[in-house]
Length: 142
Image (cartoon, helix red, strand yellow):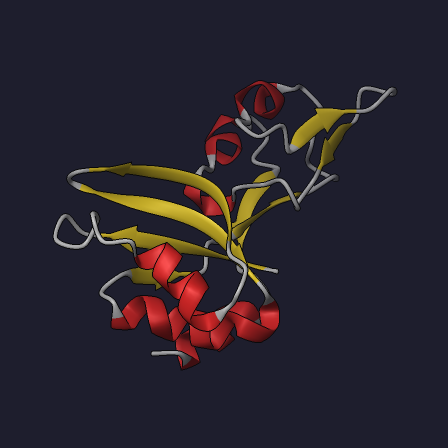
């Protein structure tokens, strides 16, 4: 699964774009987070790797902006396990194990759509990194 960030303008926010694409393409789309109101919105979703190009094309055709959010990475050499990042993570992607070491779950992470942990880290051990080949695939879908 690849995470994509969808942005909807005020003009199209009331259109049932996500449900239309699910029905038209018969592709499962997992919505991770959504912040939508009458002025527009953002949706972080997961789509199957093999359907990424056609899904991105379909969203762009309907007027949505699509990008691949960056992931978060923790440098264990720099991390001092202070827990500053732990308390800010809205999806509990960062936890402490029994020996008080910070543990990062990339599957749960919202990535650059959140980045609260990046700003909170006093030792700058957390940074945003690009997803591997997924971004290149998405760019081909222009």
